[in-house]
Image (cartoon, rainbow, N blue to C red; front, side, top):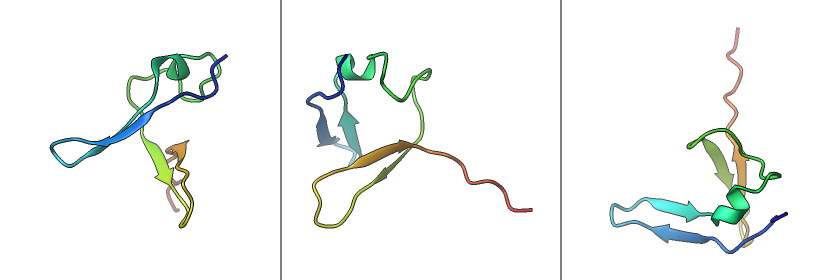
Length: 64
């Protein structure tokens, strides 16, 4: 089981930022994001912290 790996955050020439995840990590059977080539994620951080939190994006329920 691979629960961590060395990834990379980099800026492309078009100004977008990408997060690279190692293949072994992303293809591990316990990896939380499954079944799609591309999914929307929520990325957040706290001030003065050196961590990113990446969660599956869940659309808010429509109001009635």
